[in-house]
Length: 415
Image 1 (cartoon, rainbow, N blue to C red):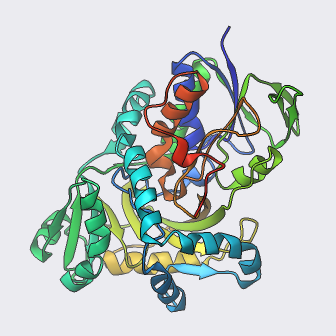
Image 2: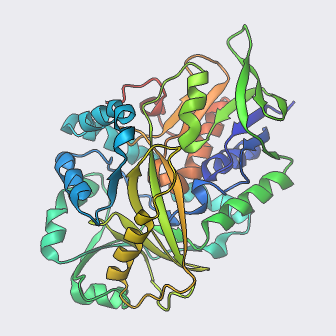
């Protein structure tokens, strides 16, 4: 008889998990408060960036983030009333800037990230989504060579992890991206990146296949779990009923820590809010996924126009949106693409789940034999949704995962 797995969360990570569980013979039920792909997965930059193996916490980052915060058009914003709740996370985040912690986290990410695109290929093929996927790489742009050299420790870390990239001069940058303004004179190309033309259609396509293969997808709010005396969960309890299970997998993104707490595990996680502007009549196109490290924004041409994504806001997950952040994202986008037309522009925000060590939470609960976690992917949910699904399906179905999951366990030392 097929294992009945209830997956809490129907974003791109949950869908990756459901897809691989079905491929291995499980019966899946997905539960989310919104339709598949309509939360954080809806508005991302569309990048499948398999080279992102360096953690966010790095030596010297504190000074850089202070400067970001003090800059009126900087990408970092805080809500001071949220600071007391955020201090434990910040303390652990800063502790992860130590070289030995950077080395530990980089080694874990270097095992996890590179197979990510290969894991997507069979799922894209199953859902006939290949036409939505582009290649050609990711292009980082800089004001000049001095700005690139200032960022060189970041690139040296990539090189030390065995990843390839190509530095570009102004002429090479101009040939690759004619629409980029003249204020940008240096760049770096990462050829291994891919990107999607519509993140929502990716989620919807995956969900369609899950349904066609017998999966159930429900729009309900998870309230609690029925905990049996044998150290196992017997069911997931929602506002609409009870769902019996053999296993439970928590993939609820920035809301996962609250569910983990109900199962006895405390996770130091913060919601890193991001914003996007969508320009359906942009009047320009990009040939690559463009990243601007100094502004923490990404620009991608999608099937509905040009999308500019950015901001690192920490207001607390329940705070109302601050649309000034979307304006900041747009202003930076105009600096990169000066001929942008903003007619018909729409704005959006979403919550990225950020752990202090930049590692997602993957693996079995230490308290319940049949409870599992897959959350905390920060900016990398789309990139790693499929490889996460493959690893979790392997563990749940009794196979040995392709990589060691111990660095990602929920009861690890986070700093």
